[in-house]
Amino acid sequence: MNLTPAQWREVLGANLDSVFNACKSVFAGMCARGYGRIVNLSSVNGQRGQFGQTNYAAAKAGMHGFTMSLAQEGAAHGVTVNTVAPDYVATPMTAAMKPEALARIAAQIPLKRLAQPEEIARAVLFLCEEEAGYLTGACLPVNGGLYMSA
Image 1 (cartoon, one colour):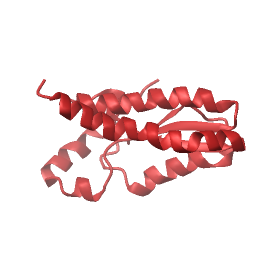
Image 2 (cartoon, rainbow, N blue to C red):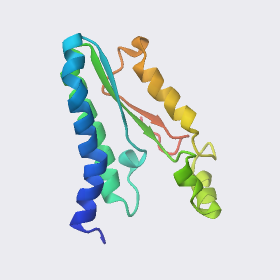
Image 3 (tube, helix red, strand yellow):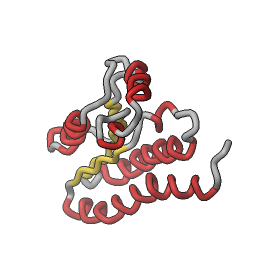
Image 4 (cartoon, rainbow, N blue to C red):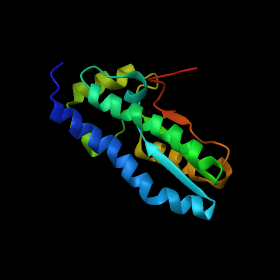
């Protein structure tokens, strides 16, 4: 309700335009070589929404829509495109949050903790492996059970 058009554009530019620009720079070359792996990093909030973050949730949901479409374009060329959607990750940014806020967040996560950066990295690495070649257009939720879907 309080979002300005400038705030909307800024967040979509940072979180959605950037994915287009990064993928655009590598996709044609991957297709020409007949092999490639693209993994876009989204957020659990793109799947479930988040109060007060319509711009961020829309950008992250849009990212997966982009991923699914690009996956269809790349499939015939040996290029897979997937999304990883983490929840809160133990990073310097979250470490700067008030301890009571972090405790409230962790309490909402079924595993009762924040993700470690290495856990997100392992999910990305899995999707980049040659053996993951039959997985494309997927959204891998690495979120400790914060959001579960069928």
